[in-house]
Length: 290
Image (cartoon, rainbow, N blue to C red):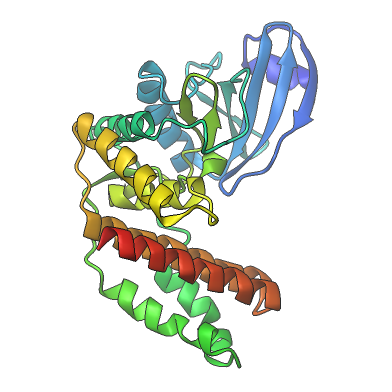
């Protein structure tokens, strides 16, 4: 993309260079360095995503939950260019790598409750769950059933269990709330990439966050402490989490991940080892929460 084209859409001074950033599941991004500072230019899947992100970022940035979007010269927070859709957000300076030892889990719980409370009031363009369990299972069921690994074959039982869990689409959720969609500074945690936002169960967001923030090597006591801190923070900010429902969504989140691994990589030794470790983690969460 030529620099002058971006300059035509956004009042951000002269662009000096574009640097490709890590590609996410719902967008790819470039760091824009200009005379006015640094920004993140993201190519989106479609206009539904653009509209949802515009509504979410407007509210969440005011509450210091996410970076703000830059308004283009057309008055919108996204642009159409060569049959593609982009938005531009302010770059967050002085981010640090995720480290569970430095995270204040109570404050994280409060932030997530504020996100769910604010998002619940928004009108969003509902979009399908691109990683729905039924879709993933239809794509890998033959490979799972034909595996020589009893552990892999047991995944069909996990699918049946998760299918029987009650569906509670009572709020607007992020939909992909792993650490890869968070920015960490010394003062706060910010949420980014709302490309999977939809109506769903807030426990699903919490499940994604906890399973990605709590390392597999964490002791059961430390895991319990982190869970209690997050749940307490969520409650202090006016949210309510049910232990049984949280376990169900952890089970569902992890299972979706296992099936996605099989879809992308096949039933290889590393995949089998990864899923076996994941099942052990789910058992730990079950012991704690039920």
